Length: 78
Image (cartoon, rainbow, N blue to C red; front, side, top):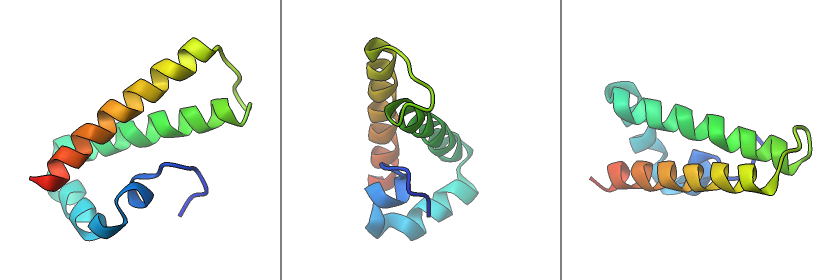
């Protein structure tokens, strides 16, 4: 597992099997998870100053990550 904070597996440690199952059987869920990982890694690069940017850009990415996380959580609850 990566040392990047906020990975999906770390956010839902008790849902690992369901996450795997949905990624394999639900294209929409798989796309959401992929997009979440992309945004999360971008945030990590900004926060670690690998790719510095404005606070506004960082805030936008964080809102996007939260929105994606809410969608993933909703699908895991269903």
